[in-house]
Image (cartoon, rainbow, N blue to C red; front, side, top):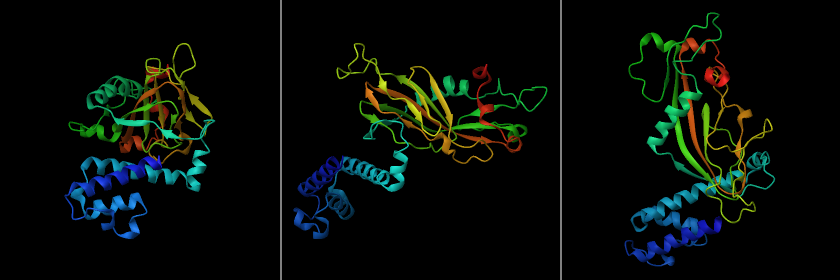
Length: 290
């Protein structure tokens, strides 16, 4: 990975020198203290002659810098301790690729998945009440216009904070981490049956590996296309701090391709509900508990 990054930094500098759009034409024009480091050369050129470097080179270079910083973080003592928590037998090598989920697909998943998994206005029941009276409406999404004042104190409002699709190919996994949100929904879209290549040893290509792993509780959740995995990464409201027991990672894919849509959700609860110390179990749809 570092060779790939350095190659890009060096070639970007060469293209900038050859562009003729800066008053530098040779590497000797770059201060000597930067010349032994492709990254420092790259940074010096884009800082002092930004118009000489193409936008594509700058964007890719920035991504490589972020990747290098992340790798250095994981190579630190604390990072190695986290990596040691992985439930994979083999060491982490490469992360799956993450893409922004198209808005229309995100909205479809909110309607067809989120609102069926998490409580809504039709099935939200307060188990603390003996008469099991129906609670006030739950609002899902960013639009809070039109909320009646009387319902604000008892509200539960979910907001989509991040929506991505992650593709894991052979040899790819994820490092142990805690999601920076309240709830995560993973929708398994592909188990490799349509995308595995001839490197698979099985007669019928399918996914080998790729479990979603929770090392703190010793749990592995295998990929099952069409199924949804929901878990909570914070303590239940009103505290809302990160819950270390939710530490998880995508297991290493040994064969095939794993594709998963990921929705990270934040919760906003009204003061009345905060005083009831709501548990996450109460956030799950009644239909799923039966």
